[in-house]
Amino acid sequence: MKKIIFLLLVSSRLWAQDLNVQAKEFYSFVNVEEAEKFYVNLPKKASSDPDADALHAEFRAQLAVDWLTKGDFKKYRLYKDQGAVFNALQIFELSNLFEKWEAENKFTAEVEKISRELIDDIENKKFRDQFSRKEILYEVNAMANARLGKLDLADQSLAKAPNTPFRSFAYFRNTKANYLNRLSYILSAKGNHQQALDTLTAAIREANSTDALIGTYREVYKKVHGNTNGLEESIKALQAEAYQKIYKEVEKEWKAEPIVAPDIPMTDLSGNQVKLSDHRGKIVVIDFWSTSCKPCVAAFPAFERAVEAYKNEPFKLFVVDIGEDAQTIKTFMQKKGFGLDVLIDKEPGIFKALKALGTPQKYIIDAKGNIYLTGIGYAGSDHKEYFKLKAMVELTKARS
Image (cartoon, rainbow, N blue to C red; front, side):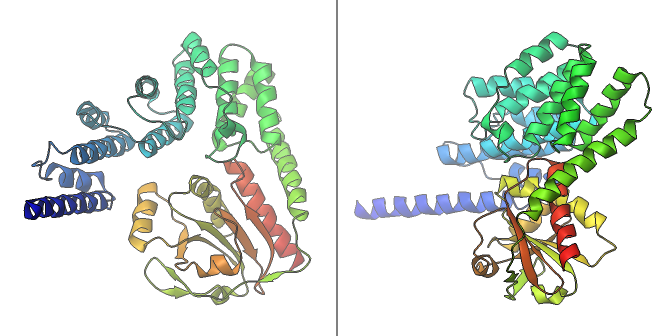
């Protein structure tokens, strides 16, 4: 009897290990086609095993998400209807995708329909919404209805998106800026053009803005003024005001005594050793992050804008991952489409040497290897994050 129990325990552990191997391999694929092939070829011998059922339902959910990301609504529906169970991260991915499509004004009817279905599923407790994305889904649903001319439905959905803490607390990408853009668009669609313009003006002046919000400002400005005279000058003036305010805030953070940048080796994604001293003579930005850190990744589009802005100057920006393996990072960066330079701080040595407080945290290193400025957290919007980084770099250049 003891032997039988022992064999059952060993078998159970081996099966659990097998599920872990399945999960690791499934999530290692960058292309959805490869992930789908892997899933289709999985042995279904343990269909009565609740752990296997749960994992495979999660796989179907991820396939649904990844096919939808490619704009394949048929495949999305196929896997969702096969009993896909979306976890919190997958709901997060879907809400981000809808926000992207919203900013690009794409697939409006589909966004309205799918977001409404997900809202119903969450409210019926079919899926767990641990990142509080239901409010964002209500917002994108409101925007989609407004674009479809269904203003009563837009009002109803927006009213169900309460003023959550995340709207004022900078954690997820563009939460407040996107809300202000949606609110203003709906106000203008209802004929309240001046109120919409006032809302957008305040948003740009405070850098609670994105390129999509600037686009809405252009549309509403023309409706209020009847022409575009002075439009671009107005945008430039408001953004300059926002930047100067942020610059003054950054000035207050300048340290009288610098920290010397540690010269502890890190590795790039190819395994090559890199030290900060390799880039003496340049302004170097390092920002600590991990793939699971939502505010870290929220800042990446602003970082990419900074890299482009300073591409002809002695400037280098690294996002420094804290201890994850290279393959996990590569897969993540490829799936998300980011082209930033990544270093891995495995111990983490640099992180500890700098006495960093957490992620995200950035350090600006001057041409001599000194650090006078550091900033922790995500600024809250694409524009505010970029302006803050720009201010830190420009102040370092001016005082070096």
